[in-house]
Length: 186
Image (cartoon, rainbow, N blue to C red; front, top):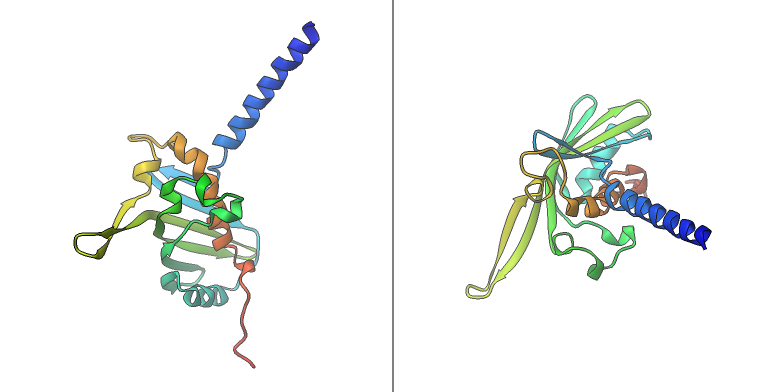
């Protein structure tokens, strides 16, 4: 009878470790410095700065795309988090992800064989209908106001659970090998 009890205890401990790892270990590309949140990822792929700039300009989501020697600066707007690519459904995610759109700015540093994307000033945009005036109102707030614990560089437990949805979505957005280059030749 004792061996079964020990196995049950080991199973509970393993389940706890597994759930903590997957519930709270998904913020690896998010950083907080002085209360400011950033998403940053290094891609081990070669890209051409002019091709990426063209893709971003044609995408429609990016604007104010500027190119310097080895950097692309940009802003983006009206971006919906792609929760479906994480295997989630609309009913299984929080409303701040499903009902809103996101905006922000960032830059891409390019070196030989790799590039690093940094996004900052992430803003949550939420549109509501004003029934009395029959018009739409857009409300915005800085995402870190609801995801970073006040006075610390730590994320809230809610964001730790949801960060993988943002991470996966941003990873797909900035993996430029996923974009098909359309030739102007015909």
